[in-house]
Image 1 (spheres, rainbow, N blue to C red):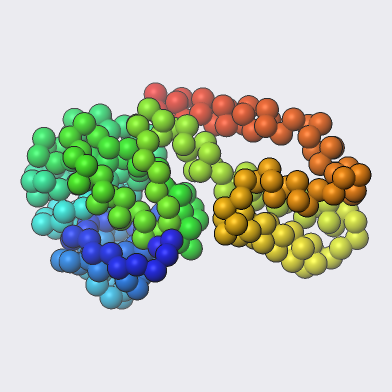
Image 2: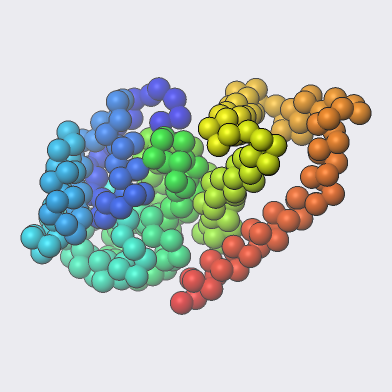
Length: 282
């Protein structure tokens, strides 16, 4: 969670326990979060199910040994999180549709699968909300985009917001903007890691050891990020404070500015958006 708080959620079913599913599960089982009716999780392997069953408040099923696992998990659940691979979604929705509780909210974490696909395969009594969390969810620092479906009420969206606030911050956008959001916050961690790699390589070029480069670069990115968030200042203002007139930082910024980074990031995110649309089109 982004700050200490008490959250109460209704019974949750999570179908699929890959890396993102496990990240969300960590938020649901964090101190201050209560899930009335418990959390039911399904996964293919018996070994993974046994591991998940060791988490307090979690009931885990393995589909390889319990064929009706997904149906058992969603029975009575108010929040149903679909966290399987996109190609698996249609068959999964057909499987669970008869077992869903009227009024349940199905939350998609499957990239590229539209609300229309979900709604076409689920009963009209079920609401759908599509989501796009990012990988910092594993440390409770996600930025998650959520988009309501045509049958979602404000209370449904508020409940899904509370769900994802257990692992970070939430931004609500129309579904038409969700692919664009994925190019910023979804892919964004990779852009940051790429910049870290580049600055670390520059440190190595200047004679620092790999360990020294790691401390210098990782610590600088972490400190700058935390300063940006805690200060509430505009990043341009914080940059100006570091950039003394006619100093060394100013000279470095001039070189970076000559590369026109804003245009470069626009081209990069445009390319990501084009690819997202290709994938959505099949």
